[in-house]
Image (cartoon, rainbow, N blue to C red; front, top):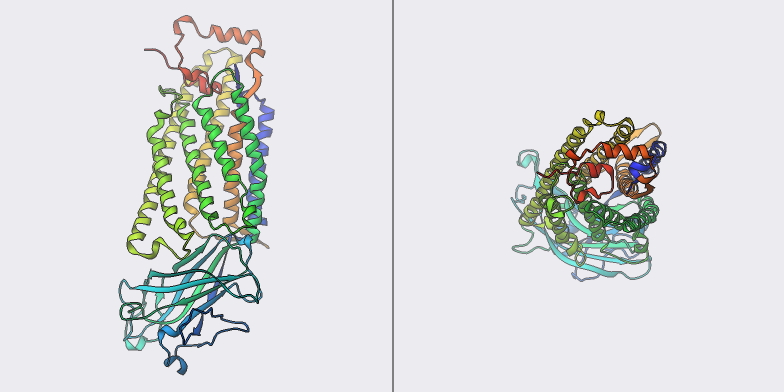
Length: 537
C-alpha cells in the first residue's frame, strides 16, 4: 500500500521543503511591510455651501469655471436671507488636479457634521437627520455630469456636548459621531460629484441643531496595495489550482475509494483556488459593483471549508472515534461552522447586496437594524470562540492518543520503532502548524475590523496592517499547499522495504492480539491507520 508523502519523504527533503515554505511565508510578510503601501487612504473634503434659489436638480460644482454661487459662512448677511432648503452641500471627489482610478477598487464616504451649540436650537435626543443625496460622475473635465444614484436617506445623529449648556458656551461645537453614508463597489470613473440637501419642514430635520459645515471623508483602497494584492493572487492561483488537480489525480489512481479526509483536503484546495481567482484584473475594464460582495463570498467559502477541515483532520486521528470516515460524526461542529458562516453571509447580503442598487443604504441607519446587525456579529463571534475551544480540545485528545501509542514503541524492534517515531514526530509538527494557522486565522477575523496602524523603524515605515494582510493570505496558501502535497499518495511503496521489516511487522501482531479494523485502516497515512484501529468488544 502506498503511504502519503509526509511519511515517505526523506528527512533531508522534508527539512528542505519546510525551509522553502517558511521562506515564502517571510517573503509574503515583507511584501506587505516594505513594498505595499497602506491598504486604504482617507481624504477629508469640506463641503461647499452652494445656493440654489430655484431649487432645481442641476448639478452644482464647488470649484472650477462653472462653480456655483457660494456662501462661505451661515453668519454672512446673505445667508441670513436664505431658506435652509436653498442650500446644497457640494463635494467633488477627488481634489483638484487629481483623478480616481479603477485600481482604488471601492470608495466609502463618511459624514462628519460641525454643529454649534445654541440655547434656542439644541440637538434633541434620538434625533434623525434626513439627507437628500445625489451622486454623479464624468470621465473628463469638460463633459456634462451623468446622474448615477439619487436617494433620500435617514441617519441617527448622535452628539455630545462636553461642557454645560449655558449661554456662556454658545458657539462651542458638539462632538458628533461619524455617520456611514455611502459605499461604491467599483471606481470605474475619474470624477465624482455629490450634492447633498438637508430638506426642512415641520417634521423633517427638526431638532438637529445649528449646522455650520459638513465634512465628507472619502476612503478608498490604495492603488499600490491593489497591485501587490492582485500580483500575489496571480502567482498563487495557478500554483494552488495545479496542486489541487494533481492531488486528486493521485487519489483517483489508488485501488481504494477516497476517504473522508482526502475528500475534505480536495475541497480545501478548491476553496483556496476559488479565493485565489484574480478576477480583479477584469474589474479594471468593467464597472462591476458586485466585486466587494464576491470577495466576501470567496472568503466565506474558504472560512467554512478551512474550519470544517480542521475539525475533521483532528477527528479522523482520534483513536476513540468509532464512526470514522463519516461526515455525520461531526454534525454539531460542522453545523456550528455552517451556522456562523450563514449568519455572516446574511449580514453581508443585507447591506452590500442592497448597496448594489443604492450605495447610500446602511444597516446602521436605524436603531432596530443596528441592533439586529450587532446581534448577528455577536452570534458569529460566539460561534467562532466555541469552535476554537472545540478544536483545542480535539487537538489535546489527538496528542493524548498519539502519546498512548508511543508507549508501545519500546516493545517494538528498533527498525520499526525508529520509523514510527519519525512518522509521529512529523504528524505532531504538522498538527502544531495547523493549530497555529487556526489561531492566526481567528485573530485575523477579529482584527480585520480594526483600522491599520503603523510602526516606524528607522528610515522605514512598516505598514503593520498591510504586512498582516499579505502575511495571512500567504499563510493560507502555503498551508493549503503543504497539506495537499504532504497528504498526497507517494509513489514509493512499502513493498520496497526489506524482508526483515515486513517480517517484524508480522511478528509484532500475534494472533491473540489481532484486531478487527474499521474502514479507517485504508487511510492516507500510517498515523491515520494506527489511530483508527478499534478492537472488537
